[in-house]
Amino acid sequence: MKWEKENPQLLQAVEQFCPRYPRCSVEVIRKGNINTTCLVQSGSQKIILQRISDNVFPEPLHVIENFFSLTAHLEKKCKTMRDQWLFARPVLTTGGEQYFRDDHGGFWRAQTYLEYQPLMLPLSVSQAKRIGSTLAVFHGLVADLTLSELHDPLPGFHNLSRYLSQFNTASAEEQSMDGDYLFCLHTVERYRSRAVFFDRAKEKGILSVQPVHGDPKIDNFIFHTDSAGSGLIDLDTVSAGLVHFDLGDCLRSCCNRAGEGHSERAGVLFDMEICRGILAGYFESGHSYITRVERSYIYDAIFLLTFELGVRFFTDHLTGDTYFKVDRRGENLRRAVVQFMLAEEIKNHEKEIREAAEV
Image (cartoon, rainbow, N blue to C red; front, side, top):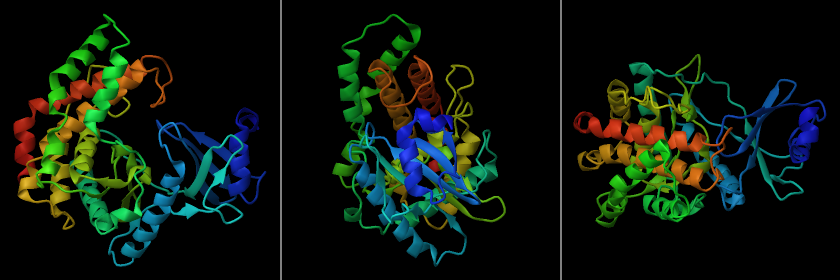
């Protein structure tokens, strides 16, 4: 097959995880911005095979170990749940190992394939409520997971001050009169002073950390097509953090009518109806214990998580697209423009968002 010649390391990994190789079909999935992900099928059995990017995760083995710890915890917790919680389980190699390391040093792991219906924009209000409820259930499921059992898979993740420091270094080496470049540059300078907002809230003891998902964008919510089951996929970023970061990132992703993949200025709008639906679902789920004081920080989380992603896209563009995958040069710059425009949209809805969070 073509992929066997183009990617010998993938061939090595398939041989380790597919017991009926060479009668396995392999489909390279190009959705993720980070890891190399493939769907491997042998007869009726399907698994997801991934090479963990060591350009993103400095210790790939930590990601693998976290996944085993987290799924074991979820297995125990889900036994007492009324509704089905959907999550992928680890798949061992044919030799019973948790992972395989190829001849280039790459770490490969596999997990069960989940059949689910992907969510499409625009969302309905009922879907928005279900997303909010699903996120709250996840927070409830992992709240008692001992933090010492988790490695930090991405040191410095959601550390806006760190991202701005990286931006400072990158921007010092490039000057441009391009309109998108100047728009991004001015936006960063306008809001950089807010970088320590959540650091101060933690220092004062107003907000505390617990296990969180880390990347609850719309693509990572899954709903069973014929039952009440729901869940979250892509658990590589689970670590200690603020639930506000999850809420902010979720609302950033789901309330952008243009969608995650949008890279044009036109059509960037923040949907308040969906925002209200997600927050209502989160608060009404029975799994959320966020206090009224903590709710007052939700608007800031939405704004700053959106601004943060814009900074990350812009910095990656300046450093040659080394983190987020692109199909062509300039894609990360356009992604940054969209996030910064969305941040301005969120700012325009501040009063409405704060009112929705206080319900």
